[in-house]
Length: 393
Image (tube, rainbow, N blue to C red; front, side, top):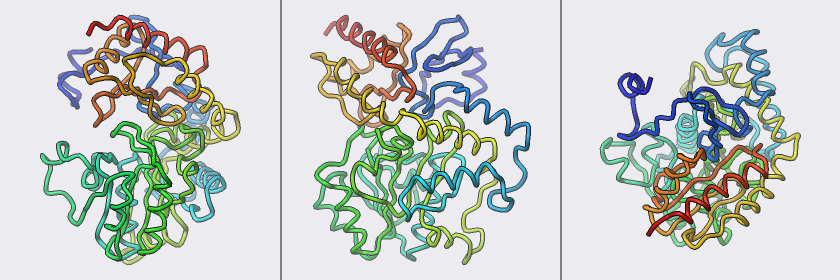
């Protein structure tokens, strides 16, 4: 099967991990040899409730037996998407009331950028250096990492960059700027949090210039940082909120949310200003609804901060320079990239799944399911410490 995988399925790198999957349950992924792998990555923050959570599986199965795709987005009233977006609105600030469901995080970014340009009549977009918002052309255009963009130029025009957490750069936001798009916590750059009231100051500058603020919560959203959305930590409400990944516990989905007035600009001049065939798919929406209910009706969000404290308490080692991030969106910053690679690859041999970050080669990603137990966290951290102790410099 591995040979067929390499031949018939397009690859993203020359050296995929190529773990052959049998099944997955809870905090574990099982390979075809029957070995259990403790998952400290959760499908890159996507499997919020772990693998095959019974409530999500039940919701998907029930909806799949009722109806699946019936019409392109926005034409028919389909109960799963209506129930989901209504519940989501009840949990967000009043200005974030109307949600457009799409198929992935990068598609949600595309929709948000279009919405900002349409609503303001302006073209300039500002993003942060070392930002990652996805890989479709608009998202790629606001990626702050030239090495990954240069092969695909020309990209969309009138895009500029500011430095995350640099207040001097806020003067670049002017009355010609349609939108500033930022990750609430920078992901690929190394799980970098905003500091010194940075996001609040961005919000104030956007208010002063009539600029839309888009916050990308594709990674930190849905309880991962100890709040439903990370912007709640920083006293900053965006005009447009972008989400994805952990939204449906492992099924493909994304969305962007804004005021009803703002979102209505996509309905006319031109009509069908943003369209999608499978966005709001009832099976996916059912998974979203089950996930959101489980996250908000249990102690999972509060427990996330306790689990963060446990990870920080356990992972103290001379080769770990710092632990960045918030909640269960954490990154170990090692002394160098060689140590990070060693930890990830050696832990994989020992049945612990870790992963890299895009732009910070010294980082080791820790983003387990929110449902992971304290005992499982202790077990995984023990493996990391054993590997670090065995590293020969």
